[in-house]
Image (spheres, rainbow, N blue to C red):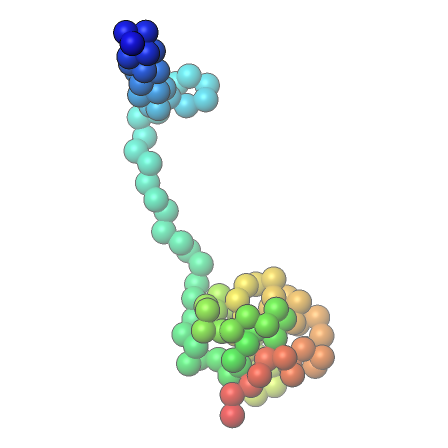
Length: 100
């Protein structure tokens, strides 16, 4: 029983002392700070579509990019979806489910 307790104690000390060091062995004195997301989001009321025309995701889940097409403002869940839409907007506009 003493061996098990001793082993647990040694493992605990090793774990606690290793947490403050980086991979190269230097002491990490910088506090970890959570960075705020810099991604823009837009309100649903700004756009004329109900779904992302590229992937079909509802715009109520979040809009991170927009594009103007004819008289409409189209919202997209990601910049990649916007880029894909702009390659052939006439073919993709029907999938947007435009609000009336």
